[in-house]
Image (cartoon, rainbow, N blue to C red):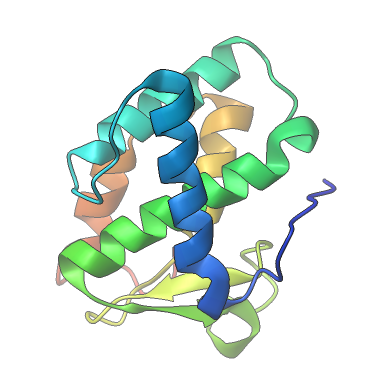
Length: 142
């Protein structure tokens, strides 16, 4: 997979990428993403549409990365946590998307990877993903 990004995929740039997703959804779909957990349903609908239309992830990789950053920002703003470089976590070499979110409960999650899976595989469940990752008993690396 070849993703072209205008800025480095580092933790400091993740909020800016999330804002790119917010702006795109507002301009194209006339919908508002407000960083609430409820907004994950809007994101999932958009991603499912990409899957159903069989849009190549190579063509929209940058947009998907931005949506992944948006999902990560929902986690951080709603539950807490921070962006980290994948190589600095237990997910080193596993996530494949440069940055992950470390939650206050010790869980490391990969919202960018989850977004790509939805588009590639039709996988559903962003709200469930949030629920599972933010539970106190969540698994340590997802």
